[in-house]
Amino acid sequence: MKHPRNSAKRRILEYLSKYEYVSANSLKRAGVVSVRSYRNVYCILFRLTTWGLASRTETASGLLLWSITPKGRERLNFYQRRRVGE
View 1 (cartoon, rainbow, N blue to C red):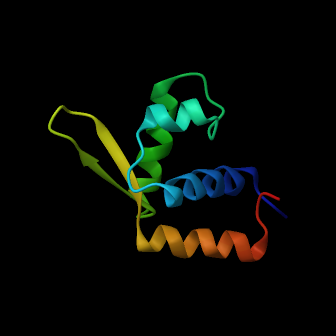
View 2 (view 1 turned 30 degrees about the horizontal axis):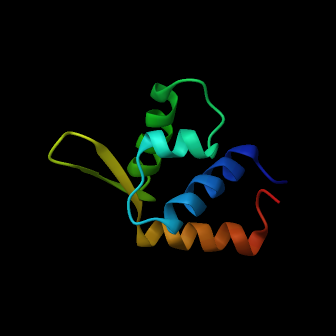
């Protein structure tokens, strides 16, 4: 059974893998996540960071940016092999 949360994780990990660094705003504008508030986007990214699938950095101006980790790439490859979210 394909779980919808894994589909969302796959979409976010795919987007993170395309760019070196991604902001919450760029995820929302790209339509990768279907949420109404930035708070929800930050919660999703926080969970990915907690699980070790993404890492967070902060610019000098205070902007938070995320990037995919090697563990995140492994998980993305797993989702692609299992065809999660298709």
